[in-house]
Image (tube, rainbow, N blue to C red; front, side, top):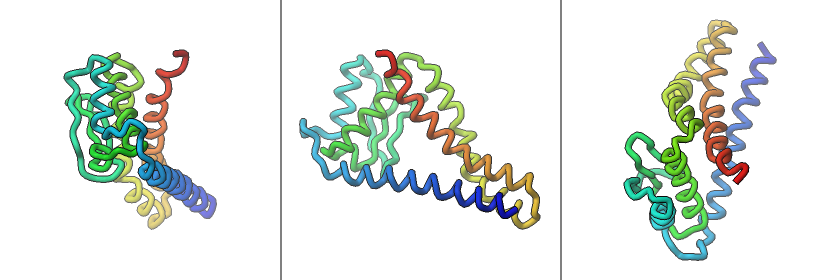
Length: 172
């Protein structure tokens, strides 16, 4: 049981460290202005237009780092700071999300696979601690293991996100 708790602690520490690195890098480059002095929304529209994706909309959403592409509605959603911001971070995130729209237009299979996993990762994220706590209370290793697996689903999901972002660039 002690070994499983240690493993659980490591599983908590690594993602929290990674999340902290992402946030600190975003904060750093949010202070650096992009050389063209255009907003994230303008960057997104330019790349979309350059790729003939005139039907993809760009919308502002609340939150920080809540940016995403919705393939069902053909919408790139940028958080307020990235939508209106002139920073290098705003431009990079806008370009990244538009990259998913381009993948969608090219019917990129890995992106389809990733989006099919959204409900599973969401469920796992919500239920992980329920199973982990139940496993600890009832000393049921099976429940604990299910909780750990559910906890890992969002991280695997995010690794698929980065995989789907990088793979099309290989060999070009």
